[in-house]
Amino acid sequence: MSRLDDVDLTLTLDKKEAKKQLAAAQERLVHLRLLLGGQIGPGELGPPLLVLFEGWDASGKGGAIQRLVGELDSRHVRVAQFAAPTRDEKRHHFLWRFWPVLPGWGGMAVLDRSWYGRVLVERVEGFAPEEAWRRAYQEIVDLETTLAAEGAVLVKFWMHVSPEEQLRRFEARRADPYKAWKLTEEDWRNREKRGEYEAAVEEMLERTDTPVAPWHVVPADDKRWARVAVVRAVCEAVEAALHARGIDPDPALDR
Image 1 (cartoon, one colour):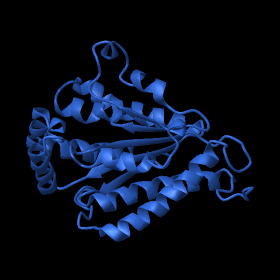
Image 2: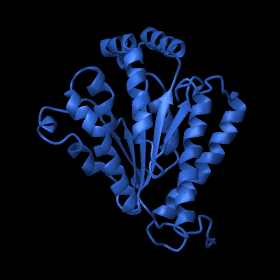
Image 3: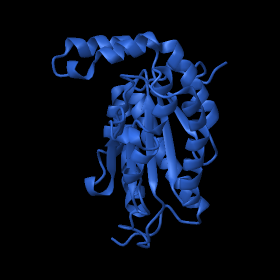
Image 4: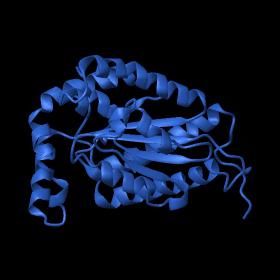
């Protein structure tokens, strides 16, 4: 069974329970983010925190990112969105354009799409030669291994929705004048190539899931469940990284 087939898309949370769990997870993340930034605790800068989002069109990446950073001080987190590379960016190695947004010690960055476009859309749509996207798996693993060796905490999400739920969201967007702009002809074309994209996703998960940068495949048919899962996963990754470095994630705080 493939990794995507193994995802339980029936997981749900009712509105009241989701609100409660999300608030608790967000409160925990605020604490951890302030600790990493040196605003609370011993005052030393913690490791860089880098969160990557990939997923199907209309899988809820934007909503999950909004809940992830919504309670954080905007000065303490950078959110960067990546679309197709520009003409100038294509003159460089495909990883070049991501370097300026990578966080330093005490920093946090969230990437809405990332270097994985090389082995997803650029692979399926033929925007990159086969030799280039096949080489990219190891280049990506090398980059993430290097970042982790320098201390970074990497959290990677694939937001997974069923074809039926994706179609429902597409149609809802098309019917809403305030959301119709989100739906493009490219989204419909990508949907028609679902099989090719699934094969690309499966190979991506298999070849770039490493101990220092594991993939979290999030069941996202229920947006409420997915949003809670994302914030919790980031908290757990930060807590594990702090423990591994001998840092108390809950130091005594002056009040």
